[in-house]
Length: 163
Image 1: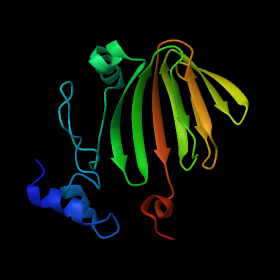
Image 2 (image 1 turned 45 degrees about the horizontal axis):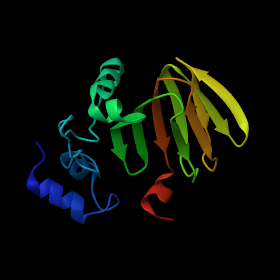
Image 3 (image 1 turned 135 degrees about the vertical axis):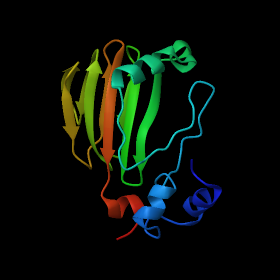
């Protein structure tokens, strides 16, 4: 459990000010998720995090957000320079990166989607992995119901505003 003191340190200190031990005690620079009616609160970064992606996809598809909309997502891990996002999309739903600041890997876990990177289109099927370099805009459009795992990484200097 994260103490009130650790939460306070996260709120008061930037990632550059904290030692690794302080970040770990506080659950990473971002602490924990807020939780919701469908999900409990959990840490956003720990020394080791392991996920059953099939179970996570099943949970996303069982939540009201999926029943009522065209997508549902969960942030599995988050730090100032790194993010792992799992999304389920209905056909026609889009995910986009307009800034192109982050380098990203896009892995289709089930279903199919079209990835457009600067006018070059690639069809991704279950088991496909695409990597888009930083500085590049991209758009992913679900061809039907699908699940996608995004991993985004920023240079630490850009993520923290240093340099």
